[in-house]
Image 1 (cartoon, rainbow, N blue to C red):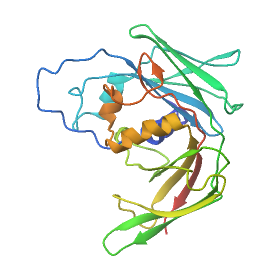
Image 2: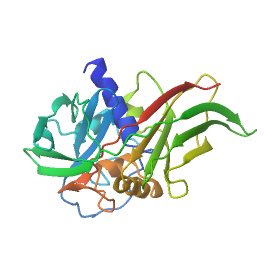
Image 3: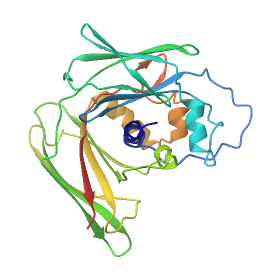
Length: 282
């Protein structure tokens, strides 16, 4: 895999899956296995294009805390799919990048029009999903510093944004940033995610300072702070995941209790453009 493709893989899995550690297998037997289905996730890479990760669901007992990340990716990735993206009358076939990744250079995105993703596989049939790209909202200002409360050394994020008039939903992600990532960190990244809507500041400026909890940071650490305006449906999907301590095995497994826009499968096809800033903590 080329360095560029690997960096795309890093961005996709670490920024998209928003996962915690793998849980230990449940000590129970005779659990009926559900039908294996296609699982879809997606990410726009700023100034590059779109990457889609296509995998298959696995049972809740098939992976655990001692699972080898590389073996798990190989187990669930679907690498022989035909993946297409259509908008209006234009149809684009995404390039097979390997390891279940499919992507293409797409720079001419259109806001608030329907994009249809179709995935055809030889073993699990076909799935499709429709979504729209919300308007891009950027930080007006953002900073990241060390906050020492005497017990923990936390990252403190301060930001401002101008909210467009109308209903909007936001996602802010904070994580350690490395130019290269080990596969284990990609599968089980420690990402802090903040979700909020604009009910209290519709059409106004929003300013806030918050601490990144449950993680220790030190001076000199590099962190990436990203923000995106996302759809209400994807916001609801992320809220359910966050409220239930969503894990990688649930993403790869049988998330029947989670919202999805994938017809005939699992996961979520979403389009949003993140504003990404990288800081060295001081």
